[in-house]
Image (cartoon, rainbow over all chains, first blue to last red; front, side):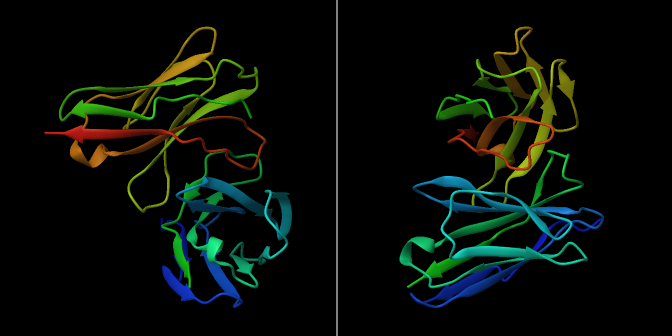
Length: 113
Length: 110
């Protein structure tokens, strides 16, 4: 069974631009979570989607948003990019909203110049 | 989620058992102990989890103390490829987010 895939793997943007990252969960998994990892803050939870609904949200500004499609694929968007948004963005999928075992993708490394 | 405390770093010789401790003294009765690891620049990888009983799978063993206030992850025969940051997380089975701490950086050496 294929794992979680994320595209693109690497991205360079400039301040003020916006970016959309994509995540395809493991087949059959319906819950998708997003995390941001930076050297200073570590791994931080962004949000989680289940059945196309945002179920949980971390402490991030409104510039960070996401959505989930009917096939469970998910996208996250960051608008008005700031230098501090440079990070590894990780997507994780789990079978259901009650399954705590999350399986992570390889991440998208975003560099904001 | 209960707070967990782990040593920042550990060394282990290749072929020996690596024993990674985790303290979770405020864990509640419905919280599981999960272990993930992250090899440099990759996404975290699920290792094992448990509630009360000791658990074993093809990757590792998890020993949870009877009072559930601490646990130990055991990699029975560490290899160089086990060099990674290991995260211990306490969370309920219905929560949807994982709260990662700073983890333990395990360095396996020849």
